[in-house]
Length: 150
Image (cartoon, rainbow, N blue to C red):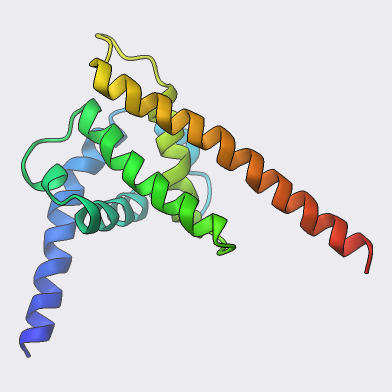
């Protein structure tokens, strides 16, 4: 019974923490352009919240989300998705959307400008996204070539 309570408490904690994060992300009107399929922003934010809680729970628990902490959270989620995809595991739609959100917020122009540390995180996200995207294109190209030669 205590396992069920623990599980339920954890689910509620994720939902509570995700609520503030979702409001912060949803405040950017361009974000909504990424969501045309069956996956909702709610699902993506819950996934991101679980990933951040596993890696760096203080980011969610100790402060309200702002542009800098959002970039840190997206960086965590994006790095984990890159690792998963490079291990030849296909990403689900919510996982892929974490990557697109990371790129979006990293490429965004902020007014006032981000602190230098956060600009560095944004640059790292963009650099990793370019490398990852190139690798994924190669993999898809290689798969197409294998299908043609069968």
